[in-house]
Amino acid sequence: MRSNFRRVGVASAFVALASLTLAGCAGGGTSSSALDEAACDALLSSDPAPSASSVSAPTVTADTVSSVTTKPTKPDDSKKNITFIGGAYTDTTLDYWQNLAAAFAEENPGYTVDVQVIDWNNFDQQIATMIQTQQYPDVLNQNKYSGWASDGLLLDAGTLVSDEVNDDFIPAFKEAGTFEGTQYGLPFITSTRGLFYNKTAFEEAGIDAPPTTWKELVEDAKLLEEAGYIGYGLPLGTEESQAEWSIWMWGNGGDWESGPGEFTIDSEQNQDTLSVLNCLTNVYKVTQDNPGQTNRTDGVFRPFADGKVGMMAGASFAPSLFSGWDSDVDWGVTLPPVNGDVEPSTLGVQDYLMAFDNEGNSEAVSRFLNFFYEPDNYTEFLTSQGFLPATASASEALADDPNFGPFLDLLPSARFYPSTDPAFPGVQGAVQNQIGTGVAEGADIPGILSAINAAGTE
Image (cartoon, rainbow, N blue to C red; front, side, top):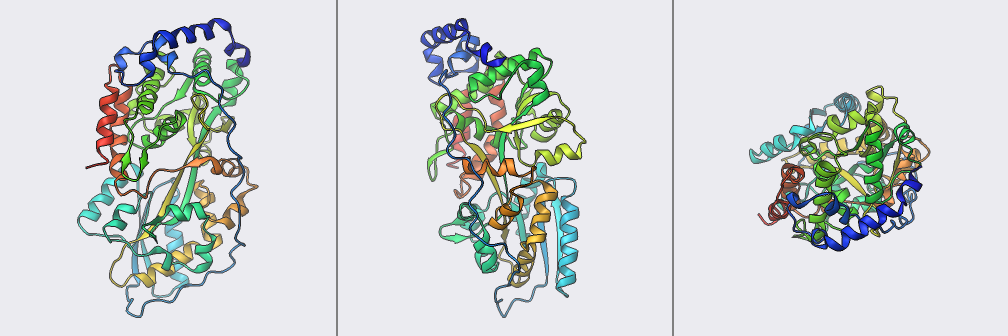
């Protein structure tokens, strides 16, 4: 069993010796060409992980919303045809929005919503083009908003929904949608990331429990490789590498920034973290081929669903993808492991709904947003797309659902991107485009992270 495998004295002595003789490697600033097994082992703490702070479902303080009252509208609002643009979360996302738009038009004669759903791989580029050419949508579903708020392009979203809706938002999510005292981003959907593990693969590899530290993860990944599985699926391609990077960065005590606008991507801790990812790829050889160009959904989630991957950092919506792929993988999920005595945490991702300040659109936008947040409509989106709620009432309704409960339990340990910093989108884009180069053999790890950090000052 794994618990006996880990505690052998020879391995512990070897790591201790490596830590003494190769302390310079653990201090950051090392090119990956200097990484060998001894140097990699020296980067892995032998300290046990502390227990996570109280992990329980989010506090529910609002009563279930039974009706929605639209706020008074401006007298000069005359636009009744509005546009909605959102990301394609699953193959059924477009169907949901088209059906919702049809139901909205039926209940609000004379009002229509033109729906466009864009694949996430092309989303940022297409939205950036629309903004540059001033072809602003009326309502946008996106995971960032503060840059547009800073440019004066958005409506005060808090005035567009009823008091019942606004009071139902979980406070932490509502606060994350506030920029300089004004609520521009309405909490839309949330997701958490956790360490997904293949229970069948663990049993075949003789592993009795998921890892809680990086050192244990490496040991387990080696055993999984010996059993014929990919030990750890590492997606550092452009699709969502900022999520994978966040989990590993926080797990080593690093962070995106020390304060608003003070980015710390190139810190010593983060250099060590990227070195560890390079070790997983090139020294321990426990990842899939070419993780620097591997995207999350097709490159890791799908192979995991096919039973080929032992461990991965998965999202709370992954089970809905597994179901769509007719997967029969027996999986479990837990908090991501950490390096030593770092407090365990997970990544919480929140997407927002926001409204652009187009002439005469606020009354129609308000109607549509209130309609979407009606409990039945909102819950249908969550359950069909596999996301966690941003409202107290929906959290209460889904707490006992086996597809949602385990991930709701992770929310209190969630940390978020610094999305209220207008410079963060530039840093996020730099991570998506460059972090994968850090796992190439011979990569200049300090130089790569320095270049990413500089994106926060451009």
